[in-house]
Image 1 (spheres, rainbow, N blue to C red):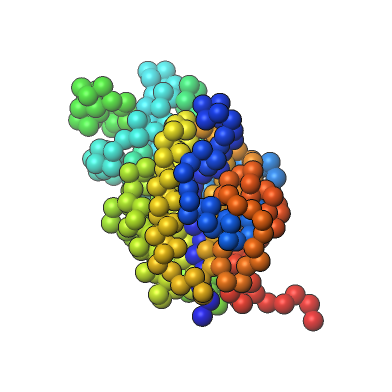
Image 2 (cartoon, rainbow, N blue to C red):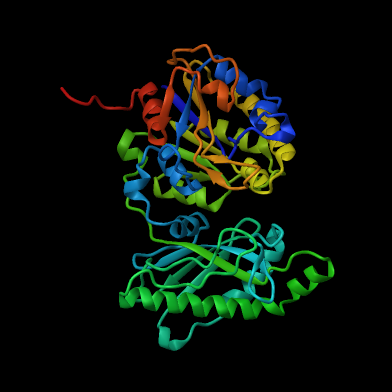
Length: 414
């Protein structure tokens, strides 16, 4: 039976950089396994959402799993929460949160609090979980930290709305934004008031927390505020098993990606040593993906580290991480049945080391497997793949292409 594995290196695509002599990190990296996939497969470039539209990792992942994010996306928060094993019930409103550093004027100095350790974030979270909302709100909350600075927040109670703004300005150097209702409905006004109250309580609890006192002694950025964004609910999507009749699983550590995969009906595989950082255990993730193919038809393997390096503006680190991902792919190629397995390699979006943001540039893709018509591309990179036989496609097209190779698509028309 034919099977498939989709490998996404988060934010791996980039723009030409002066410090790399006009090359992208992909072009500068040593990556024989990636080049082997490109040389023996069919290549192209992908607009995850649409040309020129910078995608979030949530919408891009939905797209690469074959869904139209313009139709099904319902906010980031609930996906983050579900991926963190926080229950999100109908009527709940969930947010993606960051521990962050602000000055006395509430200007954001570091949106990631120095990429605070999981240990410090967990200690801070314990204190925040003890906070009680005013009885007059008739609401409760769940707060859980995930990887480093990341966290998920769920507000539970009657008459809530996702129509509230973010407090996260999404760049350093700007003041925290006020959380406001985005319409005049009572539910939106109520939800904004609840979240505003909670963020204030969080800030007060963090101000004198022992963890922050220790961080100050170590001259580390304080985690003295929580930023929230992406109010959302669970998207209503048809599971992959119903769409294509497949058993599927994902190997990922980032809660947002796990959340997307969970709502798509995929099994989520946890891997010891996988951290979502450049120090993650790449080989352990590769082994888990290969093993999953024994029982699954489709496996999604996600690596976050390239995006981390991009957001930190560290092109040299990004190039090194690409080399580590390449060695991960080498293990995969050597341990799957190449006669029955298709492998697709891409990035969920372009993250520029120069701007440190997601950009709307297309990303390279290569598909390798027994049913593929090879093209003339010899290297896996942004510019090389643009010359390939797939041309320029959109995110959902890739899943359709993969499922076609597996014989899982239906004829359109008579």
